[in-house]
Length: 185
Image (cartoon, rainbow, N blue to C red; front, side, top):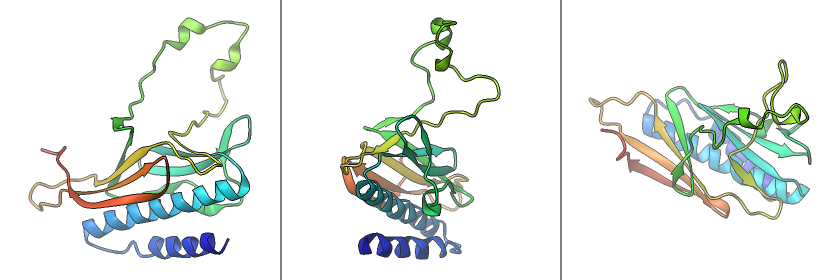
């Protein structure tokens, strides 16, 4: 428990020091905050014997708990709530070195059975959130890589750096950076 408290204190100190004007430092702080909170979430899942998940959407990320029926936000734990990245910072998630795309693998209208309406969202129901990265209660995680980069890249400034946070089957995560972003031209 002491380790979790210390990691929480370190993460909160990183959170309050986002006032940097240098883009490279902003990326470094964002990636360090994410890695710290991910490690705390993994410890929390192991200590409480619950399955957790990481959901990433555009410029936010949040941790979810599985209650046996559905994924939902973790109650009474503000550190795991949805966090919006600082303005100008983007993330790109990759699982097993494959970029994540929102492509359906099948056409859901082909399965439109009147007997089984539970497969589809009904009007007025909230959207089900399914995490992209899983943190199992035994300490195992889905292998992933999360790249932090600047959203408004400028060719004139030469600030084409990224930070990459990688998790391979277990915590702690590794942070690489600053790296040159070879994907931009």
